[in-house]
Structures are given as structure tokens and as C-alpha cells.
Image 1: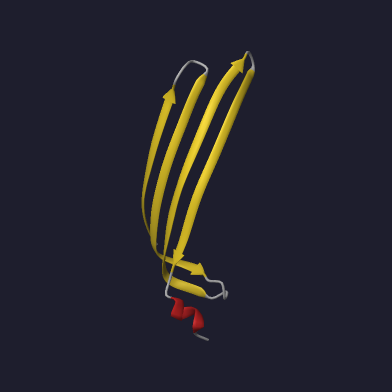
Image 2: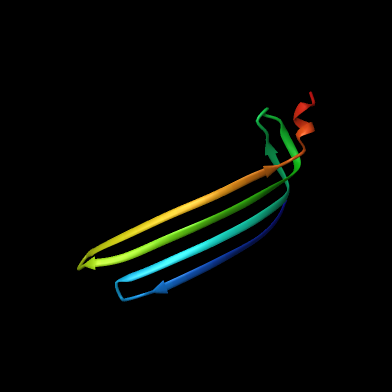
Length: 87
């Protein structure tokens, strides 16, 4: 199994009470074993993974804090479709 990846993070403290964070990641995997929709194991498959994460941290009163987090992800599994047709 081989993995190549990159992560980029950006953080900002706008005030003492307001902070944000944004992250992007991307990974490419090769030589992996995956199971296809026909429940066959596929060797030497490739997968790609991409995502974005965002966070907002707001302290709006003494002992009160609002933390909002959002995530978007996309995972793709590439293989040879002819393999799934074999018995």
C-alpha cells in the first residue's frame, strides 16, 4: 500500500474571542485491496480522498463558547471494472 498526501491548514485569531480554522486535505492511495459492490476483493486498486474542514470558535460570554464545525469529503475508489464481472 502506498500513500501520498498533502494537508494545508490556515488558522486566524481575529480577536481574543473569535478564531477560525480552514483545512484542506488530499490523499492518493495505490496498491490497496478494496471490496467492490459485488463483494469481490480487488487487489492493486487506487483510491483518492479529498476534503475540506472549517471551524468557527466564538467566546461570547464568560464561561460560554460557541464552536461550529463543518466537513465536506469526497472519496473515490478506482479499479478495473472488468474484474467484477469475473467468477
